[in-house]
Picture 1 (cartoon, one colour):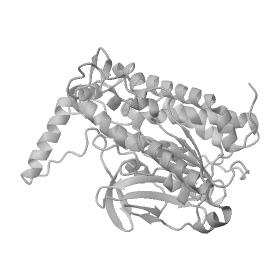
Picture 2 (cartoon, rainbow, N blue to C red; picture 1 turned 45 degrees about the vertical axis):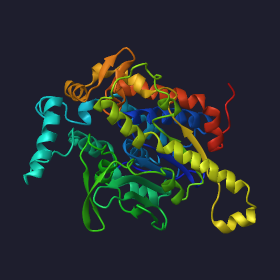
Picture 3 (cartoon, rainbow, N blue to C red; picture 1 turned 30 degrees about the vertical axis):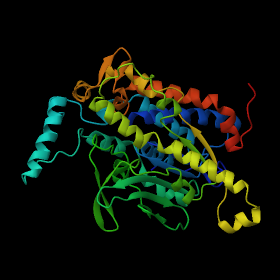
Picture 4 (cartoon, helix red, strand yellow; picture 1 turned 180 degrees about the vertical axis):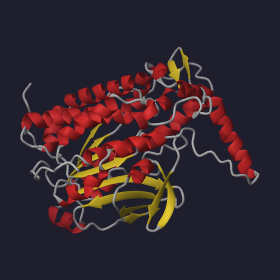
Length: 408
């Protein structure tokens, strides 16, 4: 096990990092983190720990969050390692892509689903679990995530809390799995609750199990096994776990922005949407919309609290939360269109069977591909975009962390 550096005052207490989900889109977050690491190195070259003391992740963002948390005593090393993994990524490291394991293309995938549903009605056992087998991702996580370091990092003061989210198919609950350095009361709200536990690869696999695309993960919770899926499902308030864990300011790195909703404009005759377009639209509602909505809600709450006298506000137990959100400045669907030919043949076959095709206005249904395009040319482009977007907001980032702003 690598040795840990002595804790340094790198993060003001109550500073949280929130990483949302979205399959291959999460490479964008790594670019943003690279820019933050560069800004911190300029202003505080002697500091090595995380500039956050609370780390929360959802879906693919949970993978990045756990990787960063495992390197809480060496932030720059952790970011560099994330960049190496994402920069040399291939879809074969996330899901099985060869013809035999992919059931010889998209037709067989869909045929298996149809056969599974039919045989299930007949009392048979053939029940397909997902379109893709993400067993390679589990192997990658075991190789790259030294989760055994987390207890020591928490006890040593390098982290205050770490958390990831998942959705339970059995109970219809949204669960936040977390671990913390101090006594932390589990919280519970309608259809969502938190459980303190030692984070394992099973929890990470559950959080990143995109519905329909990847199988649910079996997780043991309070002595009972259940099946859990992507943490973005049923997550109406993605910022809430960080606040429950003590955050007073939150840096959220999303994977979809306002420009995602602009689209390419309304075509004169768009035609009936394909399954790929419908699936992309549905996944966008799961992965891309909730952060913006929760940020608006938090802004309204902050405004209301600013109108309340400090003495009365203190009695409510509520306090304003400083929030900085960084999201892509370009539509990732459009970027993905340029990289579709890099997808494995089996994945292209699946998308074609779902109706994705190129037309005059670009690739229809390309949004679905952004969740599966784990090819290095695409992930590197997302990382470049993340770095550029973060550097464009360098002054806001420095103000957020109370770092001296560098003159241009």
